[in-house]
Length: 214
Image 1 (cartoon, rainbow, N blue to C red):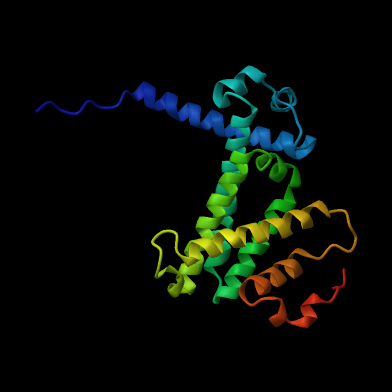
Image 2 (cartoon, rainbow, N blue to C red):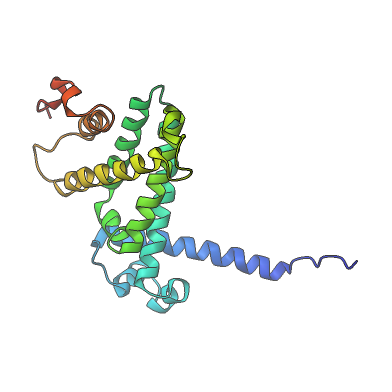
């Protein structure tokens, strides 16, 4: 039996270099989008990064490819933050609250990057899929009865997908009102969203629905 050939060290180093360079370009693109806006052109992104458009096309093929990469990087970061926040929660309500709050705060920290990442269907699909999977795992842990029927697409699956739509709709409306003086604080909105999803409007603490001091 012939021995399995060892990997070529030069190829391994080159692959590592390409991954590092690709990650650097994604970070540069995020910085450009954050500063210029979600409608930024590839030429503006390249100028902001101190390189040429051809370099970006070499790694991402086109602008949509770059948007998908930025979207995936944003989701990976958001999921890590959600896991960290959710790991400290003692109840289902607290877990959902911390997850919604993390989403609101992260998206609000750079609406330009959020809008750039979700501007194309594939970017939004990445967001919905990852968020729904995370919420499904979370609700299966706290409500095991939700995973008793239907295999992968059980009741927890449908709840999670519905919850993503609910949170995203409320969150994007809130993000768009960033300059409004009477916009609810992130903590206030997140607490109410958690109430609405788990208990419904009728059982929400009425004091939480009162305008809060700024």
